[in-house]
Image 1 (tube, rainbow, N blue to C red):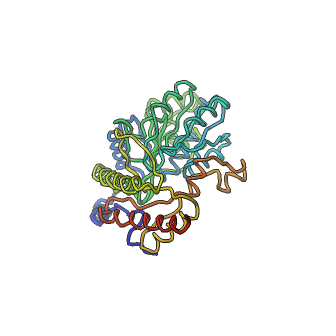
Image 2 (cartoon, helix red, strand yellow):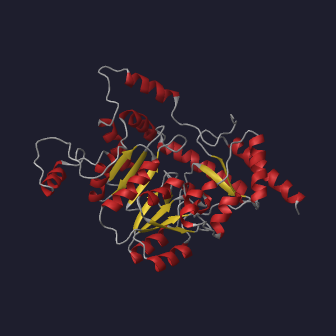
Image 3 (cartoon, rainbow, N blue to C red):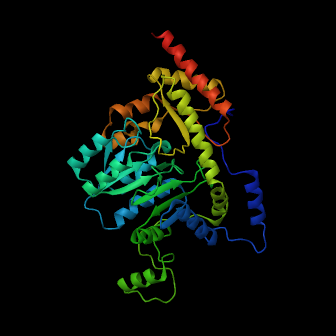
Length: 400
């Protein structure tokens, strides 16, 4: 179905595609697989985000997969216990199952919908996990002061998923700079799309070297010469100038120069994109939050929110479904917040039983998404909100 107000639009423009066509047809023909543009693209991300290393890869899901497996292969973990958020996308959690971690699910925070503070502390006390996985839910910054204090106190590794939060910041510090490793997604409809794609960031040289090898078959081809020499000497391999030494059981999750070409153009417009999405979010928050009908995420004025969608919580499951139907009838694309509680998804409860917690259940049963992209106008958002508000008022009048 074609919606007048889609949840997301691709910000790869016709001008981008024309430029790509010219580049593809240039003479000599450009390298299309991973090459110099990928390196330039990664450096641009480092410069913009303020991290030492950026490792681009095929998808945001691959970025999360690489973070998990890199940490596992690092040999630094005191155990394989990892706290995972209930409000998350499936590929924020599924690598824990792939690689034999012991995932422990945490309820959602009442304000930010990320890791619930009280529940997290209780889980840290009970399980002493080596790792905590944080999702910055829908671009809303979590209380990072509190979380970083817990990190110092309990000594866990922090993996930070900012796949839906590119451009958000907490008290002036960009999201994606708090974790030992962090991930972004450059999927269609996200803030800096390259059709598909992801990036892992870290400031740790050893983790970076592992990421480089694991991303590309596990071989030594992309580590720096000094590290290459060190590795080959360790395994008593004579260096005869070939890269075909496979040190780790790696993947092929490489990014391409063709994607990087589009990504570099997206980075040229990133500040414009952030301002548009942030402005949209503030307007949704003002109208829906102040209506008194819906629960929305809470954040302080010192933070910047750059979200991929806006999410509101209806009164109950029935009202949510009626609102979704009415939005769709009015040409507004929406969907339930099905990732509000991953513990109610079959892949989880087949293994670990259903996870039931107050906030996570509320997100799962009552949450619905509204469009947020840079081409929305003020009157578009006002209309979208009016449909949701009118429908909620009618439902409550009918149901007392």
